[in-house]
Length: 170
Image 1 (cartoon, rainbow, N blue to C red):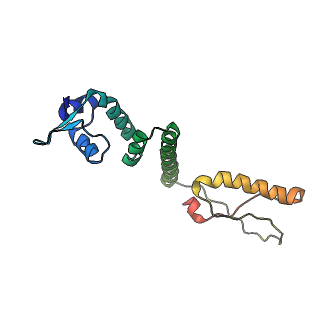
Image 2 (image 1 turned 90 degrees about the vertical axis):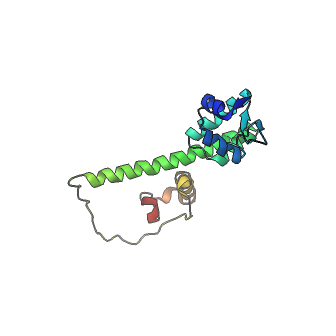
Image 3 (image 1 turned 180 degrees about the vertical axis):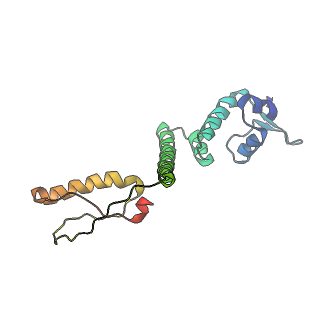
């Protein structure tokens, strides 16, 4: 058996973190001395601790780590990792957009935007409407355009376009 301090050194998890993982039923000690409350771990618990450590380094939430460790189904584990990956990619996209916006703010003299006001004759349009989440916009748009093309066919005379909620651009 290893004391919590020894286990901490071998796994690179702090004693405080090991206690928190025990309280969260994520990584329970092999033995807890009833008199002293000291926690003891087995050597064969090291790989589990290392997996937990790595997943936490990758910002996987504790609830997902718990599910990844407890499920025997590789498909479920892969889905949990995929969901986390999508959350990270969404955050990265928002961060990149913020970086672009901040760089624009730092430009000494931003290029003026040419705005043209013109009257257009009335025309008949075909449209597909839906409320779509940010992640699904590209897929939905491709499907909507295919639907419109199937419905209208060769009668299309202008460029495709769309009207979007301002939140998409904020």
